[in-house]
Amino acid sequence: MSGIDRRAFIGNALAVAAATAVVSCASPSGAPVPAPPRYRTLVRGAQVFDGDRVRPGTDVLIVGDTIAEPDGAPADTVIDGTGKTLLPGLIDAHTHVFDGGLAQALTFGVTTELDMFCPPTVLPAQRHLAATRDDVADLRSAGTLATATGGHPTQLIALMGAAGIPGITPDTQVDTIDSPAQAANFVAARVREGADYFKIVIDDGTVHNARLPVPDIETLAALADAAHRAGLLVIAHAITARETEIALEIGADGLAHVWSDLCPGDPAADRLAEKVRAAGVFVVSTLAYFEATTGRRAANTGGCAPAGSVTDALAAARVLHAAGVPLLAGTDATPFDPPHGSALHRELVLLTEAGLDNRAALAAATSGPARCFGLTDRGRIAPGLRADLLLIDGDPLRDISVTRDIAEVWRRGVRQERRG
Image 1 (cartoon, rainbow, N blue to C red):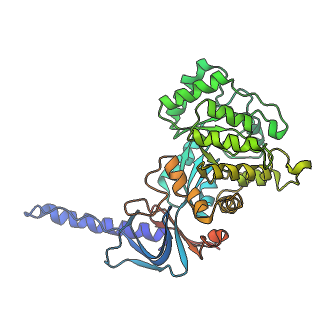
Image 2: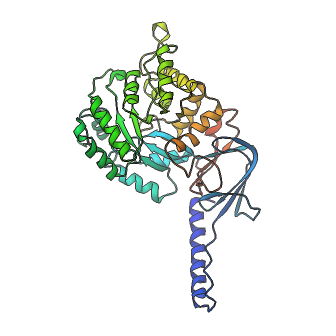
Image 3: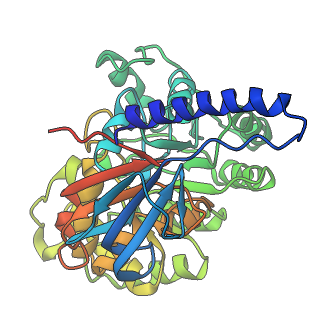
């Protein structure tokens, strides 16, 4: 049943319930008004990856917007899961949302996006869309990130405005910060914006052959402290080893990227990975971002690719995983490249190239982000959780690339219409 069909079903059910309520109110018995029926979908006999474990030949029941324990009662729709794999809806742990991105993401089975910077001229409309529509991905956001005047990504705002991105003009301004004294007010403004977590930029442009201002260490530390006092996770944008060290020093909870400036085999990478593990910090991989922006550039002499290449990013992900650091699948999807939705499937392939087995890669895009970001209602398949689900033709535990072979997607229990 499509999302439109389901809404029609619920509307009819509510009309019946309303009529019943009139009769019941007039009844001297005072019997309670029955709740309207909720649509029931049974996925029968699929292999289930529940976010942690694999269960062969399992039935999963969707009742309304929730996963339920199969109870043997009739279902309104039964879907044959033979030869298919049911996954939790995918979570992209690093995106930048603009018009059309959330709809595109859902088409590819990404049911939640974790946005890492969205200008205040764009974010309210995207939040409203995610809250009121079931044909787009759900959304959590850092809102306005913390960066210095002229720092990353302010240099990109004018480019986005010139490209005609809705809500952005060449003269669009965002808040910036340049001293510790501003930290408390800056974080308070993000809380008023409704930020779900807090992002700090520690990127001086070195990887991209630029020079960009960065808040000094005192300002960075004051921001992290203020965000923690406000109850927000602190995510650091750091893409070099030195910037990663700074992120650890200020007490970041997560890194928005792997570093990308240490050669494969450099002992410094192992030492840094151990520091990240000891600090209890998670890392969002964004390998698809490095591949999209640099391609698979040829290695320089000594087997070391240019800083910022996917080769060095893969090497960083490999040592982080070997050290036991939680890796979360994120793409840094934008209105340009990498694209929303499809890029996360490429990220899964790249994670396996970095040494994760297929089960760990799938967890990095489901239960991992849910746990690290406190999304307790999703990321796993279990009774009582939100029915964000993805049914795949084939077995991604054997071949990770088949995650693109999408049979069905449900967002909050609404079965999405498949196109093309």
